[in-house]
Length: 89
Image 1 (tube, helix red, strand yellow):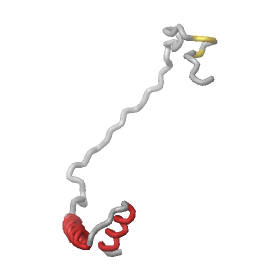
Image 2 (cartoon, rainbow, N blue to C red):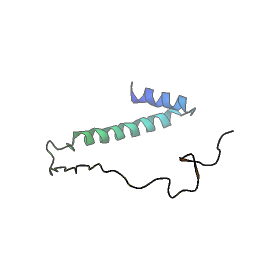
Image 3 (cartoon, rainbow, N blue to C red):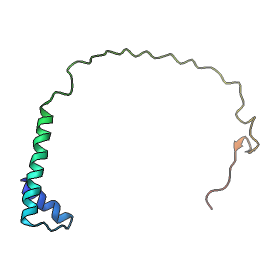
Image 4 (cartoon, rainbow, N blue to C red):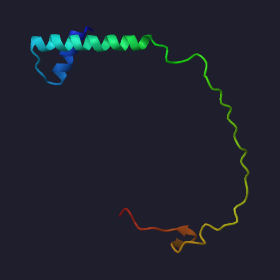
């Protein structure tokens, strides 16, 4: 699809009426923007090898028994379950 066709389709979707002069001006601006993007595409922005190698070290988890009762510090309990306000009828 050419830029002129794309512009006409976008104008139709946006319900914008463009004059012939406006169409020509916008198509030339779109062409300029696309040329800039083509130049940007020519650059190699992704190096083949990373410049800095990072070695990740993970700690080993230790599983220990918890001696704290989770219910000991709450006054909102019923049958060893936390209670709160009723949200839905």
